[in-house]
Image 1 (cartoon, rainbow, N blue to C red):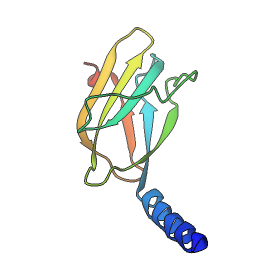
Image 2: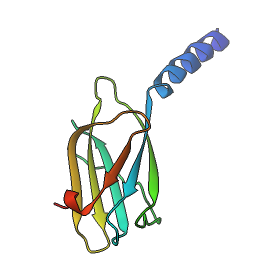
Image 3: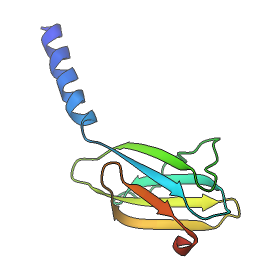
Length: 109
């Protein structure tokens, strides 16, 4: 009986992970490094944790974001903070798998 429940649980988890979105954030500012990147479900009021951690996204570099898509949600809010504390915000953004979001100075808040 325990084996059967475990198999069902693993099948269920496999289905959840199949919904993962992968996309990239590219620093196209030309001269400003990104120190913080936050990605959250558009329905959430919380940004969650910084995805870069101790890393810095320098101009011309890409950062891979892998996130589980919450059921019923396909839009995301993205907040990026550069070395000067300037912000770049994308609200209610639909993201396709493997999409590259190139952030430029035109996106500066």
